[in-house]
Image (cartoon, rainbow, N blue to C red):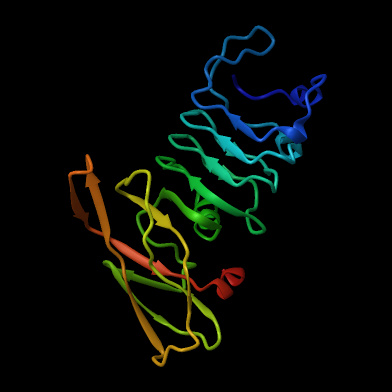
Length: 222
């Protein structure tokens, strides 16, 4: 399929507002107007009208180039292995996701990468990156970064997160709040460590190339 037709939003007896999950992984079986099926390149904007959509799974849609505005109800976006994905023509600033997966989406432009990196998640977000985004307040080589504490605010700190997979050349972002009211130092040092379990029998420590932090109260200015 080259694209989903706009007429799909007019299907009889289909309540788009009630759709909670849409899985188009490896979508090679779709047919439109008797045409031979191919991978989807773009979505019609009708998808934004699915006000009850919570999960959108797009694994392996190798021809997908862009995503249109998506409904505010979305809490999981899984776009693993969308190798041609370049643009996210949407805004997540008013949303909190559980997960954002953009594994192996190496063609994402910088605007899309910045958007993902600053989107709040309850669990984590992952996307290809060779370095911490410039819009992060604090950036450092290696696995340690020093943060200046803003009076009366909350800082983001490293915490334990269980990841579904570890991919070299990717950036993982997550958030944890820590109260700073009783902190006497003007600086905090955050150390990151990545342990990879192999068949649940042993674990290996992976090297962290870069790390960074951004305080929540500063996100709106990035």
